[in-house]
Every structure is written in structure tokens, then in C-alpha cells.
Image 1: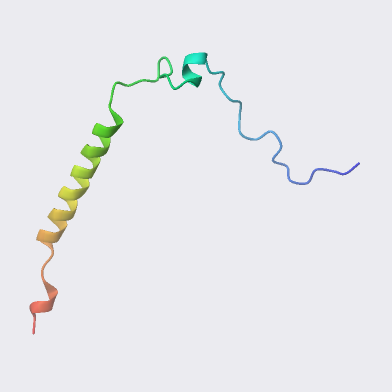
Image 2 (image 1 turned 135 degrees about the vertical axis):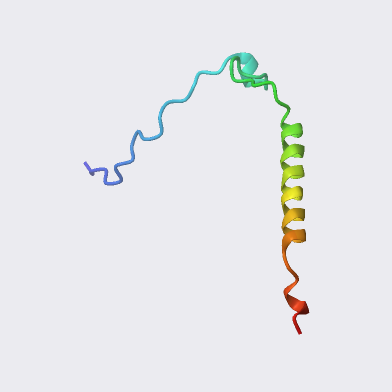
Length: 66
């Protein structure tokens, strides 16, 4: 009989039991926060664009010193 040397057996916790509706793509009860993922993505992209524009306008042009 060989010994197990990896020591990671059983690590990772247990899985949740899913209802039939959850298995078919329904939202799980209680975890819906009411936000639209597409809207969240649009908002994130808008914020990222604003930050990049601010950085581009606030950077001094270092190539014009000569």
C-alpha cells in the first residue's frame, strides 16, 4: 500500500446543492443584487476611459524640450 504524499486531499470545501431552476440557468435565490452585468461593464469601461483621458491631458509633453 502506497502512502499519499501530496497532502492536499480534501482541500477546497464542499459544493452547494443546486435546485433544478438554478441548474437550468435561473438566478439563485438570495444572491441577486439587482444589477445588470452589461450595465456594470459599461460603467467600468466609462470610468477607465475617463482615467486614461485625464492621465493623457495631465502628462507634460517631454519631447518638446529641445
